[in-house]
Length: 448
Image (cartoon, rainbow, N blue to C red; front, side):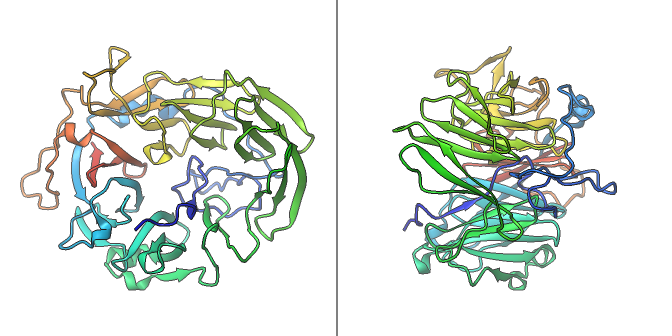
């Protein structure tokens, strides 16, 4: 039985969407805490407050040190999300779609809705996060503020018709005590067309209830023949900040409407991209031949840029409609990229993606193309690939087990197996480790 197609969890994509929530005023860029060197990125915000100037388009220090940081990376561990005695038919073996790391714990979510928790120190499976056999977990969110994991699920018992949210402290998960968690938003009716959206900068969860008014920032009303009414609300109390109408071309499908600070990005089918300043109605257009409708965005608030993903290519743009960076040797493996296969570092200077293997600067194509991909790390400022984990690297191996080390997991995959059909990727910057999940439901740890 399938879950309702229209019911969705919305995780607005930012460069730090898997990171901790940040407390800040509504729609204002976060102010730096001098005691914290790693801050979270801005999200769709409107006006006001201190704005950090964009960084110069030049390689950062961490980008220069990147090859050294990833030197001698090897396949260290392997975890199986389906490692359990008995599985309900609902949880048939499917691909890994999301990986989240919190301290020394790794959470791997499979497309079937099964989610496994693993201890990176002992390399043992802790538990399955599903609290009942009919639970299908749709998404994960780590709240670093109170060190808890939020799961969003649907249940077969109610025909997968509503979203249920639950929060569990990390320490309880570490001990396998899932009963220490508790439900969230029990008074909300999160049925179709309802949704849950995590705002990782403002420290808010936005819910759209079919019976209550939405608490989102940009409210897009029903499209009229030649315009769409828009309203920007305060995330704190729902106060309207601005109400306006955006003109549209008749009989053209709206590809997307996106808000970034005071900028509104509007794209219709076969039309130019419009970048509108909602403060003064200033308009910049980017020719439709130069800007193709992307499958995903990542907004880089520190640098006042945004990344687009389209037909396996990545590009960085500014809000003057200028192409800032084209990436070489960074052809994405999946044609319709989803951002679970991409990681942006906290400094917003490096993108890590699962890519096509290249030989002598040329990508493998045709029937002889490699079934394996590579994990490429590229500078966002220059577009150059600074290092990669590639099956063509003769030094890349499964790390040998140290004598007397009983904490290692059992690795059944070869390096080639582990680099084949990667479906999820996460980089733990604190541990300097890359975690990948594949179509077989396995998770692999790469580190030096």
